[in-house]
Image 1 (cartoon, rainbow, N blue to C red):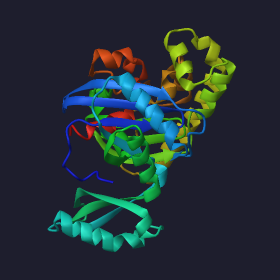
Image 2 (image 1 turned 120 degrees about the vertical axis):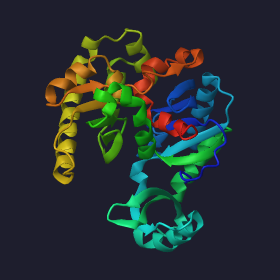
Image 3 (image 1 turned 30 degrees about the vertical axis):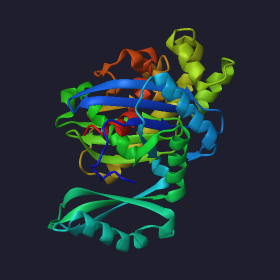
Image 4 (image 1 turned 45 degrees about the vertical axis):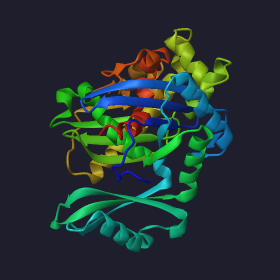
Length: 356
C-alpha cells in the first residue's frame, strides 16, 4: 500500500471518500509552512458507498471528476485512504541491522501467521517505527494488511476520474499525520500535554490521544453522524448533505431550527466520548488525565454543536480545524475550505504525505 516508499512525485491530492461525500484537498509548501492550494467537495448519491465499501465505482469516479474540475487543480497525482475497519495492523520486532529488502522478505514469510485471509488476496505494507523499547538491537516494524479488492476498488475510482493513484494509505494513519495541523489550537501547542482528538465522521468516530505531540493511543468506534444528517436533510426537505451544509453555512438554517435533533445527537456523542476515554484510561496507565478534548469532523460544523456537547463532558472541550492557520488559495476559499476545514483531516493527512 506504499506508505514506506519515498519515491514521491511532487504534491499529491488527498482524496477522502465517505458515505456522503468525496473531498479533494491539495496541500503545498513545506513542513511548518503548509498552504492549501486547491479544494473541492462533491456529494455522493445514496448507497454509492456503504460500510466503507465502494459499491458504485462509476458514481464515485464521476463525483471525484466533478470535484477535481471544481477545484481547478491540474494535478493528476492522488493519494487515497482505506478505512481502518478494513485494515489489520500488527507490530513485529525485527533485527535492527536488516535492510528494507530483507525486512520485505521476512514480512512476506511471517505475514500469513498474522493475517486471517489467504495471502494472495491481501495488499501488504510495512513501516519501520523505531527501536523496540525492551530490545535495543531490534526495531519495531508495523505490518499493515488490507484485502486487495478494497485497495483495487479505490484505485479503480481514481482511474475512472483520470487520476494517477500514487499512494493508498490507511485513513487512521492519515488522520494521525494531520494532527500536527492542530498543535496551534492546543494548550502549550500540545507540549507535555495529553490531548484527546476525536474525529466524528459519517460512520465512525476516531480517537487519537496525543501525548507531548505524539500519538500514544488510537481507536475507532462505530458511531457517526450519518443518521443525524439524514434526519436533518429530511426535516428540511433537501436532497444531499452538501445542500444541508450550504444552508447552514449561509445562515438559512439557524441553530434553533436544528437544536432538538442536534442536542440528542450531542448527548449520544458525549456518551461515546466518555466511554471511549474510560476504556483508554483502563488500559493505558500512561496518564489518567486529559488536558483537553479537541473535536473535529463534519458534525462540528453544525451551528450550536460545541454548546450542546460541552456540558456533558468533564474535560475542557473545544472544536478544532486543521485549516485554521493555513494560508488558503482564493480557489480553495471559493469552495468554502474555511467552512469545511473540520471535515478535512483525512484528506489533509493524505496530501501531507508528499510534503513530509
